Image 1 (cartoon, rainbow, N blue to C red):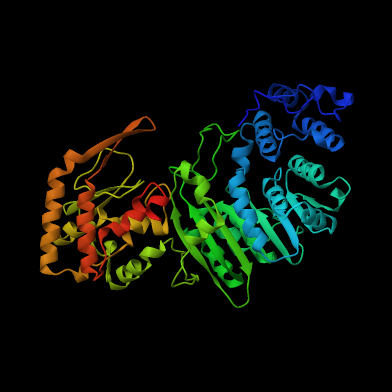
Image 2 (image 1 turned 30 degrees about the vertical axis):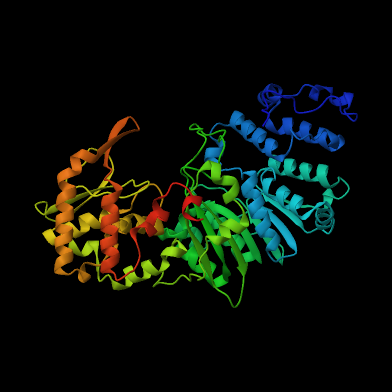
Length: 532
């Protein structure tokens, strides 16, 4: 792809190029930065939008909506390096926008709304998908609604729509500039919504907002947007952080979702590939990836059907992105059953459909949890567990030299041997992926993990005694180190054969006729090698 640094925005050979706007003839990134620094972001975009409206043929392939989004992000960064960090803005990539637009096309609702539209990546993709004739009819019928708190971004979005679909109908677009959470701002009846809301914490709750339980519980903008959209729209396609799927403070949001209707959620890990790829202008740590683990939720209001199909946490490599990001592939990750939230089932579970039976047997047959065997005595058996677990969990019999770890003391040697092996199995890692999968392993989540100690026979106890002794004896041989934030962090990387041997034994104890290789799907750093 040609860079902004290499080419001008406008082709001066365009017949309609006006001498009145001669300053755009050689307009490039350098000129743009100069304008933003000199006359400000608003005035710069006023000039560009005015030019495009008078000379729509100047909208070349270089100056399309994707590049405009990048330019606008750069402009925001110039005006305020903290702006995007404070506002939690993440531009929706074009391939993700297309997937969301395709799902929106299948949704019910006459009025089409883009909430937090920004410069228009999502809505422009949708309009392009339905075709020029249908897009013009949608606009001219007054069924297109755009919402954003940023007046400049809204103006850019409106301009791009006008240039592509006609300035004669642009006044039919409903534009709402302001705080979407304000109770006076409402979605139209019979609407379907596409949305990429802001991702950041709410520092103070405004009096103009509805003081809902979800808002008060979560204090997150994205969840407050979800609540309002779900409550007012007929159907929705929305991309957000995935934390609402299982996070404790989002219970009221999940409960509300299941009372309103039904749908599905696909969630994505952020390594090795990341949904929000690309440089994040305006954030000091402008890496090519970020820590947002995203989820796309598709929801419809339904009086009869309730609940959601939940995908496992999808991990993919960047070279798989094109094949992965299709509606057909993503929908294949969904199980058949809908999960409904209740006090007895407070979290959505991210379980690969090939492992659903194993999960049910494991949780049904296990009569104990790890916390049932934890001792407060420092003289009992120690298990140290690094709290960051990218591809596996490990247990050590002694403290590792690292910043973050979970240390538990177990009072009984037989229990110690079993828990030590269980944490080094796929089960403990899988438990984390089901209910979290973020950056660290929450202590409470580990303590509440079910363990089938009640099913152990004498021969099983002998196996775990032998296995634990072998692994403890060899722990020092498998210590690995990694530099993180300027300090060395230790971990243990046991041979995969140890984990496979433990997995097979646990599956046998649970009465499951499967091979340990069935867990490859949760440890893989690719998508297609375990799905095909």
